[in-house]
Length: 115
Length: 111
Image 1 (cartoon, one colour):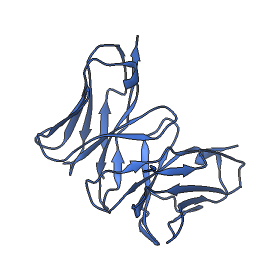
Image 2 (cartoon, helix red, strand yellow):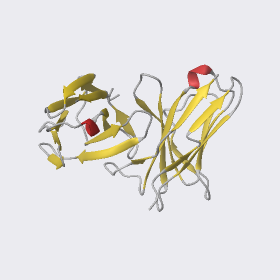
Image 3 (cartoon, helix red, strand yellow):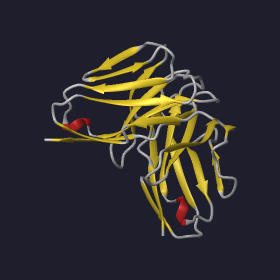
Image 4 (tube, chains in turn blue, cyan):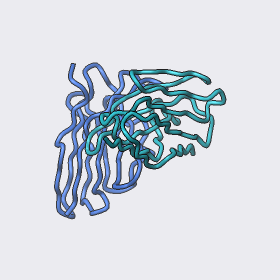
């Protein structure tokens, strides 16, 4: 039973380019959460998605960031026109249902470096 | 908004020693998660506590949630180098299982 998969594990982009981060939840999980960990800072919630729906995007920056979780395929976090401040580790987690106090399984993360 | 404060921020202990990490919430907790993160890797689930006064153990790690559900502690007995990493407490806030995380405690275990 494969865990949460994220790819790529490392991503290097130049300022102004686009970054696409993918997250495949555990089998049978239809809820995905994205978190960001900036250097020397804690883990911060970004967005919560169900299949084809954004449930809570209160942690997403207003511009350049978007997320989707299509009916088929992985969830994608997209960052347009990246800037150096976007350099961080991006983690996704999945759960089978969207309920309080249910375990979230985390992926290994994608480390984005913006040159 | 809910904030979680962890103490200490970092800790260096000798192998075999016991240690405790604390997580204090600014609001009453619905429950609390403990995760461990190895440097450069993802989060590993350790334990989930829901009820006031609850205590859970796994191998040499014990976590407790106080009766008022505003503070949790993580205790490691006879620490080993494999325990080294960053320990994070997290609490559900608002939507479903969206988590707010603590500031983290970096643990080093020396030989």
